Amino acid sequence: MDKIVVDGGRPLRGTVRASGAKNAALPLLIATLVAPGEHRLANVPALADTSTTLSLLGRLGCPSLVDGDQVRLDTSRIAFHEAPYDVVRKMRASVLVLGPMLARAGEAKVSLPGGCAIGTRPIDQHLKGLEALGCRFTLEGGYVHGKAGDLRGADFRFDMPTVTGTENVLTAAVLAQGTSVLRNCAREPEVVDLCHFLVALGARIDGIGTETLTIEGVSRLSPPTRPYRIVSDRIETGTFLVAAAITGGDVEVTDADPALLGSVIDALRSAGCTITTTPTSVRCARSGPLRPFSLVTAPFPGFPTDMQAQLMALACLAEGDSTLVETIFENRFMHAAELRRMGGRITEKGNLATVHGTGRLSGAAVMASDLRASAALVLAALAADGLSEVLRVYHLDRGYEDMVGKLRRLGARIARVSDGERDAARFQAAMDAPLLEASG
Ligand code: EPZ
Image (tube, protein in one colour):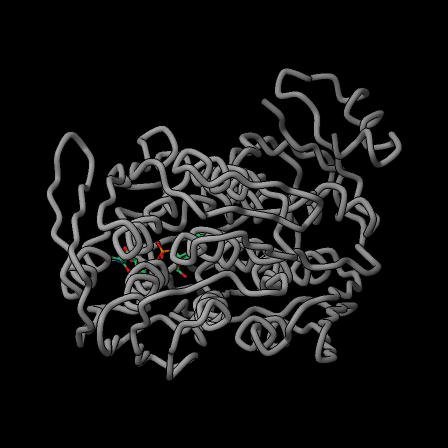
């Protein structure tokens, strides 16, 4: 297992390209199941979760070929209906096979995802929405077993705007007979990208980007003639903007859509950063002191919960008190304890965290608990005085493509070393080593 070592305190400068969005790539790759044939997708990020998704599709009988950020996937034949425990426990998003499999094959068996570090994360809304279309579920041996005859359009309202819940039900409704009206849907850009992809397959969807989706079911869908390009990753983009803000640097992220980052840009501006945008790039620069700020996470277009940890790290470097309220997940302050190890002064009360910013952090060994917490700890280490070690970086690999390489190109002193390595001189050697070696 690896860890990341960082020698902090250097302003990051330069340009980095945003990869395709993890949270769009997973539902789109899985949605290919509703359209038998050969699919080509472009701008697919090289992540552990992408590999897990392709291996899951392979186990269902759908082989794939990866060539850089291009993926070819053949869904002509579905041989099996099961998403096994060993895959689902690695990646909850595997539950997204339920909708397309039930619509395409009338049967699906998926290991019930357990809780995770950030919350209990039930899937009741997924099941209720699919039941409204005519699916029937039994729960046995830790598996949800779904069966369906011909799906029928329905009028269904989600109790809350759930991202993968909306995606699961939507991907079934496109093949249901008649009209479905889905209400209180999630409006995240990744849901919008899935809608556009399904339309490219021949689906009929109105209200894209709003909380009400009206779907006219069709009897057959087929792969688009041209490769479908996945939307860029707004959370990765936001993470790199915070890297500039937290180190007092100047970073431009290209292949990024500023319209997807409104609330993040507002927060960075309120913290004293200068943000400039073009239709395809966002640049963040900071030279003066960081000001404290307040944020409340919310469904899109509100402030994304997937950026909360990164902004908590930033708040540690501000001069004064910032407040962060987490409204989406009930246990998403795990990174606070690790930031405290670096000298962060953070108090928590329920879903409210108050950060008493002191303008500095000091390097330490810290442990990542989940994907975005690991990104926040790397950002904190980039700003901290001295050496830090970030352990359990496998979390990072799930959602960030070549993060060490990208940060090195922006001037960071960072490297990936084996977990057992203890020798600081060897850390320095790894950080001095030519990039390819360092990013391993
Ligand atoms: C998606 O998770 C993302 N994952 C998450 O990103 C992201 O944090 C989250 O949306 C919120 O934006 C993917 O897209 C693969 P939800 P999802 O269903 O769909 C409750 C990352 O770091 N709920 O929108 O699982 C739920 O418990 C990950 O990339 C129910 O109660 O989130 C939560 O409190 C982490 N019942 C709230 O709704 C349900 O059936 C929103 O969750 C479904 C959800």
